[in-house]
Image (tube, rainbow, N blue to C red; front, side, top):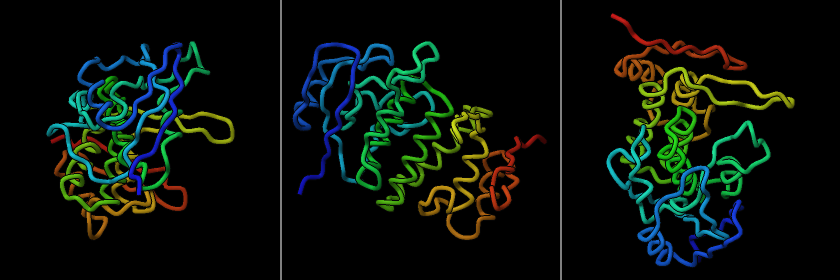
Length: 237
């Protein structure tokens, strides 16, 4: 039974490469540099992993400005541009268009990690860091690997330590609005319902408040039914 999926990737150039199998992908990775967001190496079809076993390329992969994921031979997005939204070209394909093509559920979790970790390596931002953390969280939900749990917690913490106050945009009723990621991180860890994944911090949710204290922050949890009024503060002594 196959453990891979194929993802068709649109590109701004006219030349197409077809990557068949992991061996050919590894050869291409060794011969080519990773593209920037604006370049866009042309790949007609790439092979996506469908398993949930993740080998971390280096100790800080998916954390902050670490770029080792770009040289990971298991990364199917190493040669694929992961463009950010461009206000001057709003109809251009973005990293979110790529994400929408990845299968939902556990079979797409590993590919989602590689996509967002690749985007983060090319453009360190709170949004890319948070999405990388969520992908690691999803993988831990699927494989119960304690190493992935620790990496997910480190990725969530990195949003606070390296990108405090950063935002992502959500759309509701045709209107886009910003939401601060400090609170999204806290809510993802505090409430199981925020992600639908197994808790990274087991036991009573108060344990999350203690963890935040260890990290140097205080979280005032959001209240039902909308859970939009949570606040994260930097501890000052």
